[in-house]
Image 1: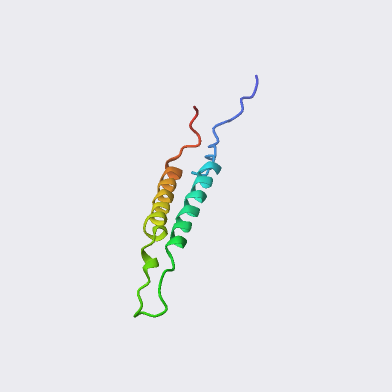
Image 2: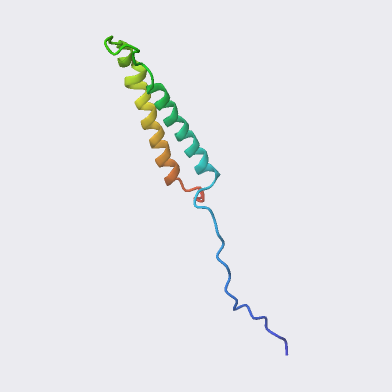
Length: 88
């Protein structure tokens, strides 16, 4: 008679990371855009509090920087929801 091998040993579940390289790439891009947006928002203050500086209301601080931050947040959401295991 032949001996049967006992394969009743419990297999360890294979541990995987939730996110793959593609997810982290998009997360890094989103983080870079958010950081760039906050850097563009900074500055524009005046050394003398009695003097008004109209540079605080320029296009870069009012339109461009918040738009970059919102685009970066959108990319972050996309990176979290992206499924790299999905086959086309």
